[in-house]
Amino acid sequence: MPSDGVMSQIIMLLILRIISFFTGRRIVLLQDFQGEINYTLEKIDSSFTKTAYIYFFTKTGEIILNNNGTVKGRSYIERWEYV
Image (cartoon, rainbow, N blue to C red; front, side, top):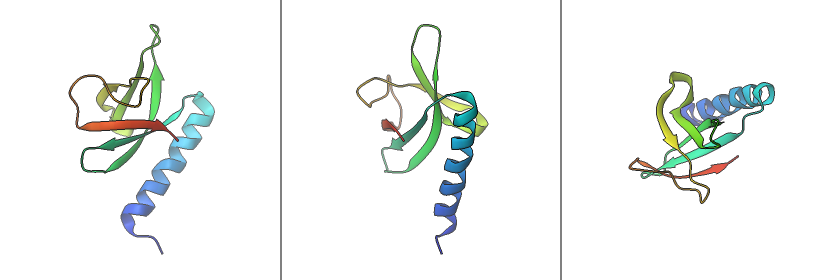
């Protein structure tokens, strides 16, 4: 049986897959400097800038996603990729 942390990540990913299916937004994996992984949804604004919230459900920590897998500006998030 997976640990509680793994189960919460699995449940979060399933919820995001459902939201992604209905909204057409892509799921993004964010990795911070300690190796912790968060899942969120990409948002593209009118100027085609890709952004994402670090914590999707609380809408905190909005970051700009660069095309090379890094984030713009200073952030503890080191890299991102599509799931």
